[in-house]
Image 1 (tube, helix red, strand yellow):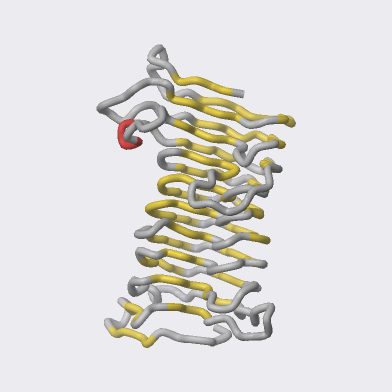
Image 2 (tube, one colour):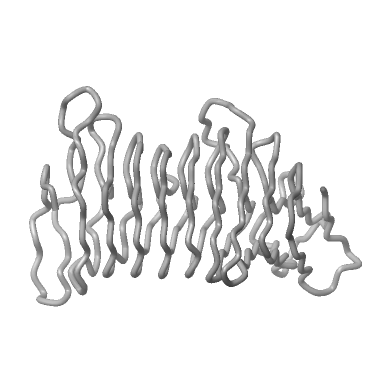
Length: 276
């Protein structure tokens, strides 16, 4: 199903999805924009199951070659107590350009107090240039990252069960990750649980449990810059299990020299190969 945004649209379009849909939902802004911020489609999920033969279930796309700063963002609202499923059945090898079961060529916002389950056999679970997530409970399986924001991923009060992914939550080359009050159980993760190559900027009062890495040289947190505000609140880590080849994975934190502790003004040395 293709839902076009044209020059006749003057307000943000809203769509309600419910029931069972076979195929995918493409929202496409067809207008060539050279200024402004465009229109932001809003998709309200009200107990929908989408079964797609591609590697995209819901996507927001802009004209080829366009500058995405002139276009709107994709908003996904998950209605209270509803269970929503997206299953993408196209099987393919992992590539940098992989879309997500929910995919936005600009920013992606996901909010609500319902349930959102995403299985993508040929891409990311969720992907946008940046992702902001608030409140939704989710189960994710993906052949690439569970959640991928090219420049940034911010999650507030989220709950995740990620059963299969390359990185559970990943970013692009300079991307950063902000996490507040999340609960995540991650299994069968090939690389890292949190991969913020540009830094883990906020990491406050989270619970990360039962994590299992399937290869060596992986970590729960991977960052090339110090983790800021790490100790303002407690964060609990379950054990990062041994790799399948019998060697121990790198451990809790990889490639961080020090961790900022703003609550005391001091710094901690990074921990390696610890259970917590």
